[in-house]
Length: 106
Ligand SMILES: [Cu+2]
Image (cartoon, rainbow, N blue to C red; front, top):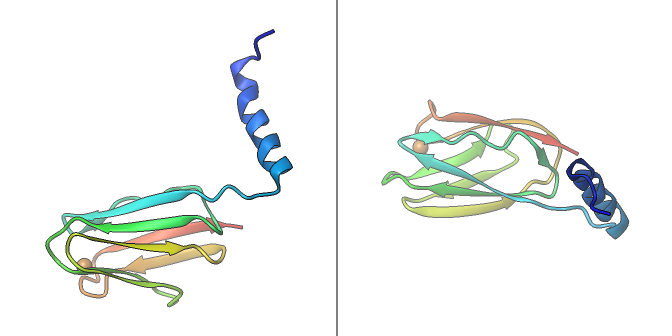
């Protein structure tokens, strides 16, 4: 008997709960035209963010609370694992008008 489509998310949830392993997800936040792309809405501790600078300028992804500071030369990437829950505002040290916010759940 085919399962109805709407039961699939439940099946996946049960699979992950049963495996005992949190599903760490990798996300990319891109800098282009002196702007950060919108970070993912659903972030959790253990997820990875790959910051990618597509500009020809050097940027940083720097947390206001100093929990991270990723240096991003032109056309480069920097990777970080999210270590704690909470809201963190970030900006670029060289261009303070470049800002964004991560909202991390446990
Ligand atoms: Cu910058």
